Image (tube, rainbow, N blue to C red; front, side, top):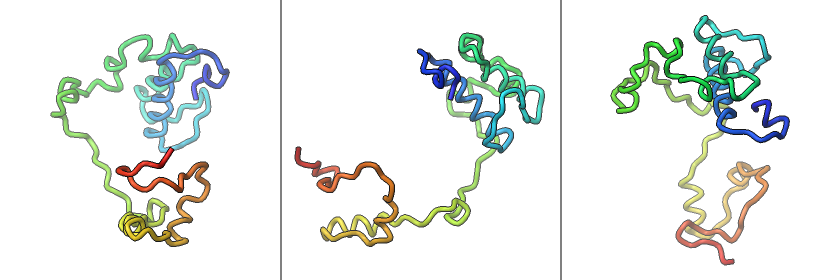
Length: 148
């Protein structure tokens, strides 16, 4: 979180630019760890943009102060093509299978069939919702909202 959010101070769009800096750092370094002052980005431009996005003073953050599109990190981006959806992405990620994702398969058809039959879902499928802070047992389907 941006420092002003952690300090429970008033904030503005600067928190979004700070969050973008964190996300950009994660994407570039492939690390979820960030320590102020220790940028491990690979290029000078990457380090510079991350540093400018993560400035402690929100009024000095890139995006709040200055045009992020003009930064050297984005020098090869044709923004007109991006906005008109004509630019091909430089990298298209391949979907991960369930084993790589570390998740169990979620079979929505089984859940929908249980709903139609008004039967309880299996314990395995019920376990997927363990830890949810709220469930509404009276909710049936989007067409039949719960009675108030």
